[in-house]
Length: 93
Image (cartoon, rainbow, N blue to C red; front, top):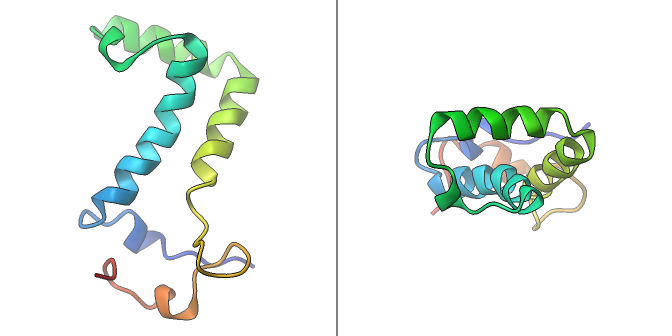
């Protein structure tokens, strides 16, 4: 079974991963809907976008796949973090 150090990945000191993960969730939705960040000008637009997203199983799957693609550690074989990375308490410098 794959083991991933979620605590370190979503640590407030690991803003790079957090921003990449948020981007991996948002960018496919915006691209599919033909929008840019500056098009989101009100909470009504956000609500409408969220509803359109949830109604589209293709887009939900595409977005989840895109977000999951940044999770595996590219320096290890398979999907797990390395033994050393699993012991980190905060991101390695």
